[in-house]
Amino acid sequence: MSEATVRAGIVALVTTAVGTGNGAIHNRQRYAPQLEEFMSLYLDTTADAVRAWTVSNGQELRRSTGLGTRRHTYQHVVRGYWSVDDAASSETVFRALVTTVLDQLCANRTLGGVLTQGELSKDNYPSLVTMHFIRKGKVLVHYAEIHVWCWEEVQM
Image (tube, one colour):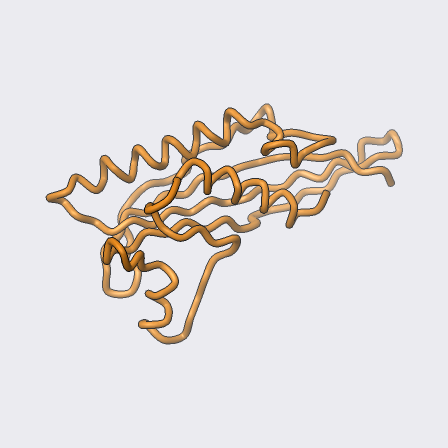
């Protein structure tokens, strides 16, 4: 199992949780030098609003278990972006989606079977680390960050 395989499993679960019509889901953070191009990566044209999710690798820890194996622990960061629309109670809508993503990740300890020799860390369940406002280009958006830790045992 590779980091990319773990990331793909998380992307699949986020895709299931978020459903259609709730933004693009990228398997990495996306950047562009020009504002228009940058915004096109996060803009949902059907809603004419920023709605996007990214999954990227945070940390990777490797430790010997002393028994001829090594434990690899991966941290992935799920980031959600959602345009602020006070009249539409966007904070409530976005928070419900974030909760759905958390529930989906917590309910699938092997990431839908991707983790065959490990699982999501029992000590660190997927956690909402922060939720606040940020600017994405010229747009004020809700921002959420979920950390997901998982591990696998690798023969040395």
